[in-house]
Image 1: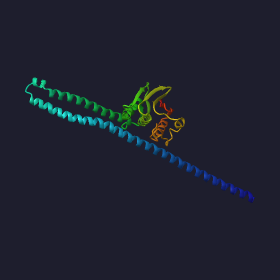
Image 2: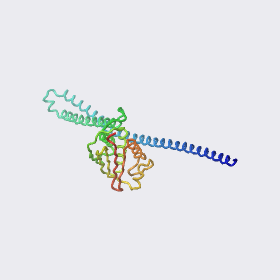
Image 3: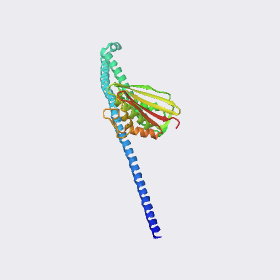
Amino acid sequence: MVNIIGVSVVVFGLMIYFVRSRDLAFAELADMNVALVNSQAQLIQAEKMASLGTLTAGIAHEVNTPIGVINSNADISERCIEKIVGAMERCGSIAELESDDQLKRSVQALQKTNRATRECSNRISQLVGSLKNFSRMDEAASQRVDLHEGIDSALNLIQHELKDRIDVVKEYGDLPRINCHVSELNQVFMNILRNAAEAIEGKGRITIRSSAAAGQVSVCIEDTGVGMRPDQVQRVFDPSFTRKGSRVRAKTGLFSSYQTVQKHDGEIKIESELGKGTAVTVVLSSTG
């Protein structure tokens, strides 16, 4: 009887020990999960800040150039107007005005600077419109949108990284509007496009193809860059993956893109061949 009681006490003690151990293990696992989620959030936030810094620098460059032209044209216009006023004061008749060579040159120069100023103003308006469309900060977070608009806005905002070096070929299909967090998906396309541009050494080409079938839409962005080895493709969504001087320079660009596409119940696939280029395909549901 004493032995049975003793064994029962031991078994009961072991049960308490294992239950407590299990609870501690669950608590530690929960803490690790919270830490992992926080780390992922920090990585994504770091990527967003890095991308914002690059985007801001690019936009500043793109805006400063036309502003410089507008300022220069304002000075030229002012001098032309002074010469026109002088000709009007100098000439005593319409016939003299019509034959005044300095007046003709001043009017022609004024017309030319006005055209250039209008072009620069249109470029700034285009950039502001693209930035607004890209961020969609004044609209609902989730809405039905045309993915092509976001891609075009992203291309316009990184034009300074492409012009005179990379040709962009658009092979757009007929896509239905899909329900998504538009600013987040726009960031995905910008990340992919920027990685494609960085992977191209010298001159090259980026081809964007889109299509819709069987309740899904797909967007494929293919570049003629340096490409990657199979082992690098397997690790490309790792937040620590980076190859200096190659396709992925921002450590978390594709990591955050993967997280965003997963959030939209989509899929992101990468095919790459070293020395030939890379194709990144984003597949999303068109029925959500």
